[in-house]
Each structure stands twice: as C-alpha cells, then as structure tokens.
Image (cartoon, rainbow, N blue to C red; front, side, top):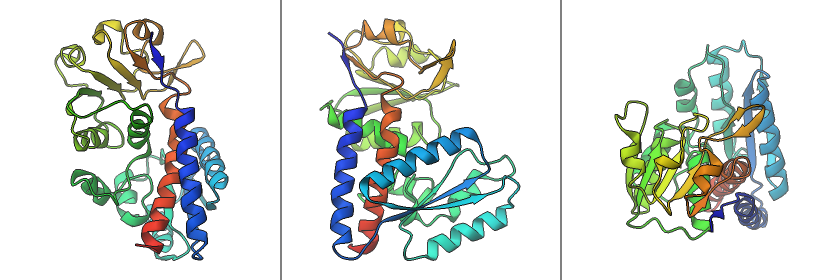
Length: 283
C-alpha cells in the first residue's frame, strides 16, 4: 500500500524545535527577530509573507516588516538591507520573491549578510552547503524536502536519487544536500536528452520542474519514493509536477499537493531564524 507523505507533522516537529530554541535564547536576553523585506503588492508575495509571519509568531519570533513600492531603486533597497545587516536586534532577513524585473535578484541577494540570510540566497551560504558546514542557511524548499525525508525515516545513504529541475533555489542546492547525505544523485533538466532514462533507475524521484503533471507512471520504477515540489493549477485545482493518482498506484510513498513539501517551508524559515539567532548570540 502506498504511503502518503504529509508535510503537516513535519512542520509541527520543526515548529516545536524552533520554539524550544527561541525559549532558550530568550533566557539569555536574545530575542530572535526576522526582518521581512517586500517590494510591491504581488499577491503571492503578500500571501507568503502572511504565512511566514504566522509561523514566526507561533514560535515566539518577532517580525519587522519593511515594505517598498515596486518602483523602488536598487540603491535604496540595498541601503535598507545593509542597515538591517548592521542592526544587532535583527537576526534574519527574508527578501520576498519575486522581485520586480527592474531589480536583480542576484545583486540584492549578495547584499544580505550570510549569517542573516535565512532563505539561503547568498553565494556564501551555497558554498557552506558544498562543504557541508553545519552553520549553512539553505533555501527553504530544499531543506523542507530533506526534513520530510528524515521525518519519515527514508534513508538516503547509497540510494539512487533523481532530481528534476536545476534552479539555484531548489534543484542545485537540493542536489548538494542529497550528496552530503551520501546519496548518488542525478540532476536532470530541460536540456537533458532522456529524462526517463534517469528517473526510471532512481529509488527516489524528486520533481522541482514547475511543469504541471510532468511526471507520469512511466517515469518511475515500481516501489520508488516520489517527492513533488511543484505547484500549479489545472482546471482551477492545485496540482503539482506529478500526476498523483497514476504515480501513487506505482510508488511506495508519495507527497500530496497541496499538503506536502509546500506546507513545510514556513516552518523551515522559523527554524532557520532560530538557528541564525543562536549562531549570533551563543556561538
């Protein structure tokens, strides 16, 4: 029987752990605080900001919201981020995505202090992932995937894993994290000649392609574990990269959409703010 890998118990576990860390920090007069920087009123950004604020408050993290008009200049935004970098009361900085096309995501990311970069946007934190540094702050979605696999005791050591998608915020850092867990990893993408050649051999298939129902039953072998990182809509209903019903009939375990990886990401952010505050106040 196929096991459905719900993200909700994973999120609860992460939030409980973050709450304990925050409580311990407050005992030494360190009050973890997150600055959320948003440009404009893009609906998905506002929605995610609200969800993040809810998660922070649930674990006792304070939130400072910094909002700019979508016409803000790069110079003004960077100046504000540098001011947050210098503030001793701010322990984490989250820049909401997407940014207006007039702003360079990479330029803005490089301005965030690596120790406050709770969504793992900076090159420094990606480098820390490469060397498996325990102080690394990583993008929330890859960490959500890793947390889910750990929660359900899905072993990675020696397993063949195929990651579909190579974006710098999901596919690439996730590939590195899987390698650090001693998996053998294939990373396929839009230029890969035969994606199915790799996915059919994998013990675990993780799809972060952003293509609705890309992964069908013919993409996986019997008994594979399938992790769906995608999110989109079909006929007005939320769906992921995986054609759920037909793949679930063949897989040993599978994440739902919604209710899977996506439901873990704000809990990951809360845990990373707590970790960042601990690194700054204790270590």
